[in-house]
Length: 217
Image 1 (cartoon, rainbow, N blue to C red):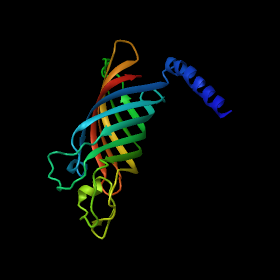
Image 2: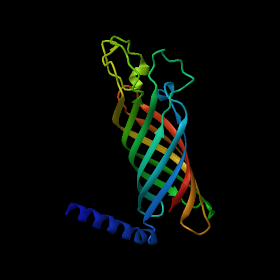
Image 3: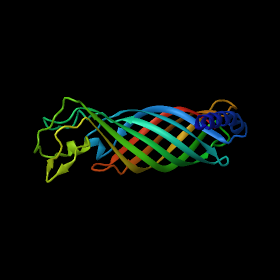
C-alpha cells in the first residue's frame, strides 16, 4: 500500500512540474565549481571541487524560497605541516539547506541580473580514514586528529583505530550571484560566490564555494 502511495506521489509531482513552470512558480538550478576553505578549515583542508543542485518556489519576480543540496570535497592541505602519524584518507561535506533569494532579474532591461541569498540547514562532514591506519593508545591529541574525527580525553586520543567518522551540525550561509538570460527564455547562466559556516564539533567547517551553472527562472 505504501509503495502505491509513493508511486502516486511521484507521478503527481512529475505532472505538476510543467504547471509550475508554465506559471513561473518553479525555479531549479544545477552547477559546480571550486571550493576554497577558510580558517580554521583551511588549516587542514585544501581547495577542491563541489556540486550543487536546487529546486524551489518563486513567490514573486524578486523573491524565492529554495531547497539546496551540495557536496564538496575537503582534501588534506598539502601546504600544512602535519604530524608524522597524521591520518590519511578523504573528507567530504554534505549540506541540505533552505534559502531565501532576492533578485533583480534584469538590470536596466538587459539580459544581466544580480541576486543575494541567505539561509541555513544541515551540514554533515564525513571522514573516511584508510583501514590500515592505526593510532597507538596514548597518542597526543593534536588538532589534526580532531579534524579527522578522533575523540580526545585528558590530552590523548582515546580510540586506537577509526575507519570512518561522521559529524552532523547546523550551519548558515550567505552570498551573491550574477545571471545572464538566454534570449527570451526562462533559462539563465549563473555564477555565484557563497560563504558557509557549519558549527561542526571540534573544528567548524568554513568554506567559500564559487559556482558556475544553469538555472530555470
